[in-house]
Length: 399
Ligand SMILES: [Zn+2]
Image 1 (spheres, rainbow, N blue to C red):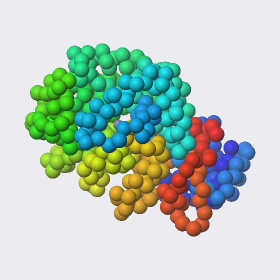
Image 2 (spheres, rainbow, N blue to C red):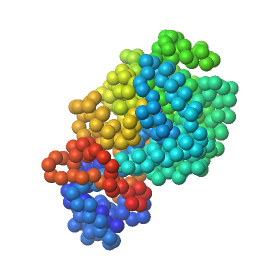
Image 3 (cartoon, rainbow, N blue to C red):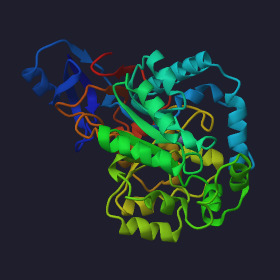
């Protein structure tokens, strides 16, 4: 099949005016000017007309479990109160409700042009019952705060459910809900099985107060549920994360948030040679009213920064177009083509798929979307302005 569009945004150099992509099976076979593609390739021609054809979007951090919680939890006075509120809401749903919630989330993400998602699930046992309509990295979200003696068992049980999925990884939830043992067991598995890891780190001021100062509402809450608080009162969350015995297998890690970093944290990042990947969720960040995300500083240190929607418990849609616009409002100096990279090329790298996803390039997977595009502005501007459902999408070579 040959797909022609007014412009093809490959993410490799300048967009191609009057461009086309040849798709064979689930792969991109050729890309270039329409005349050249037609001369070099056989097959049916689909003309998308006045549209921009671009790589499918990659959501680098999401919890589709909580699609059913959209609009249910108003912003709370403290992060600890928010955890109490989401726990109360979560208890109202059955496993079948969660399956419906995840399926609704997939449908919504796809409607907004997402073809790949890094999805954290608190219910790995449900994964075999779900057929994902887009490319999915299933991360089991792991918490052992109420039973740290069971950390290995919790990890191994989750792996048993996840192995049916084509792409999976592990997500120790956060330093305050997952034990040191749970983190290190996940790292052992990652090294052995070459899987990815993700976690929430340095998200809130209360997390900083908990670990650095041994005080604050989150500290009191965790203490009240019986967490061993002996790791609190000395180090920042980042210091604790990076200081794990034996070091961290950093390229395996996709780290969400990093809103709260101290000057000493930045010194530490500057000194450490290896880099993990970072996900920023601008609208969830605004919902919680966190400290400003240190985009420029992290970028200057060479971090690969991606965008994610987080869950609908703290956001109102699974649209990465909305997420890019929210990011642009806080960082108006960043050009639209660089913002587009944060939902294509950058998350492909974070998922270790830089040679298969995130670009329109020969040999890459045929994950594509199209949005209207005319002469009045650059394709990148028009992509960032696009609001609504995507009418044309291809996942793994299928329309
Ligand atoms: Zn999250």
